[in-house]
Length: 624
Image (cartoon, rainbow, N blue to C red; front, side, top):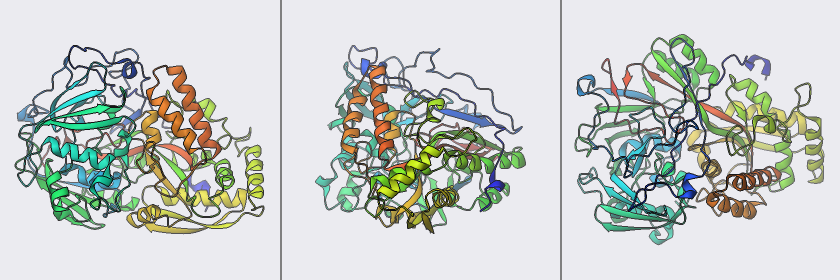
C-alpha cells in the first residue's frame, strides 16, 4: 500500500469553541446554588467546526458557560422553569409540516441487543421511538442546554444528592398505556441490578453508555405514578449531562417484564415506545422506516410524517446518495466519511449541504483480546502501544483536526497538553519526524523478553464501518515493519464483527470508542467495560493488570472537588493505562456529517451521544 497517495496538507485548521456542558444547579427546597462538588468541578471542553457552503469556517464565539460567562441555570431549576412541552421551536407560520425525510445510517446495528445495551449503531435507529427523563435541547444552539423530555420539571436537594422528577401527565406508550414512575424505576433497576429480572436479561448483561451513571447512582423510588426520586452516592456534576444522553431511554415495564418483549431491532415489531415516531419496517442491512406517532404527548410534534434511514457503508455510495438527494441528512453525527472525503464533498455540493466537523467525537484504538495468546502478555500489549506510529496515521486520514490518542484527549482540562502528548513514549517522534528509536528499541526488547524476538503471526479483525479497515491496514503494516508481527487481514460486516468482538472471537482489532461528552468520567466510561464506567470486567476480552488501582483512583477523582488533586489522580490513571494498555489509542477524531439546507430546526451538538436523534423538532423548507 502506497501511503504517499493518502497524504494531505493541513490547510484546514480546527477552530475551537468552548462547548461547556452545564453542571447541576441545585434548586430543591431553599437551595439556590450548586453544591461544591458540582460547582467547583472543572469545565469540560469540546471543539466544533461548522463549515458553510462557501467552504469558509464560521466565526467562532464563546458560548454560555465559558470562563467569561458564568454557567447558566439549566431548565427545570427553580430559577428557570421548564417551558411548556408543547412549545414550538419557531413561529407556526414558519414550520412546514409533513414529508418523509430520507436519512443516511452509517452501519447496520447488531440486532440481537436490546435498548438498554444500545451502542451508537443501535441508538440512532431506536432513539425516535423512546424518551428519556432529560434531553439536550435540540431547538437551541446552546449546547449546554438540558431540558425535560419525559419530565416536566425537577428539584434537587440542598446537598445535591436527591433528584425529584415529575413526569408529563399525558405521556403514553404507543399501545395507549400511560408512562408511569414504575417504568422509570424498572429501567434503572434493569441497568444497575439486572440479576433481579433473570431470566429476562439472561445473556444481556453488557451495559454500554447507560453504565456511565453507575458511579453516581445510589437508589430510585416511585413517590407516586408521575413522580420519581433518584438518590446519588454524592453530588455529581456529571449526573445531568450524562442523564441527557440519547442512550438514557426509558423502557415500558409492562411490555418488557410483563410480555417478555426486549425492545430492540431483533424483533422490531415488538417495539412499544413513548417517542415521536412509531416503527414501520426494519430491513436488515438495508433500512429502517418510521412514521409519525399521532398520539405523541408533545402536542404538534413531530413536524415530519416519518423518515427512512438507509444503511449505506461504502463511502462512494454515501457520497453518491447525498449528491442525488436520495438521502438528505445523516441520522446521527457519524456518516463513515473521513475529514478528507467530507472536505471534498463540501467543495462539490456546498451549495446544497452544510457539512459539520465536531470533536473530539471519539478515539480509534488497537484493541487486544487479552484472553488469547500472545496478547495475554502485558509486554506484548505495551510493545505494540510503543510501536504504533500515530502521526503517520493522522497524516494519512486527517485534514488537521485529529489529536494524539492519549487515554484522555490532549488539550482538554483533564488531559495532557498537546506539547506534553508529543513527548509521551509511543507518541513521540525524533527530530526527523520518524518513530522515536528509543520507543522501537524498547518495544523490541519487550517482545524478546516475552519470547518473540522474531515477532509472531496473528490475525487482525476489522468491521466494515467508518475507517476501521483503512486504519487497521496501516496499523498491520506498521507492526510488520517495526516488530515483524505478520497480520492476516480478516474483514467482517459491521454487525458480524461486533458480535465476534463481544464473543471474544478475535485476536486483535482496530475499533473506536465514542466520547459521550467531554469529561474524564465519560472519557473513561467510553472504553466499554461491562457496566461501563468502573465495570468489573471488560466487554471484549480486554484487560490491564492495573485495573484495581485504576478503579480506586477513578472512584476518588469523581468525588474530588480540589482541581489540583483531581488532575493528579487523573494523571496517575493515564500513566497506569499507558504502562499496561488494554487498548492502544491511536488518535482522537472529529466526526463529520452532512445536512441538506432544506432541513430546518436542526442544531448540531459536538457530542455524538448528546445530539438529538429523535428528530421530533425538524421540518423541511422547501417540502421534502
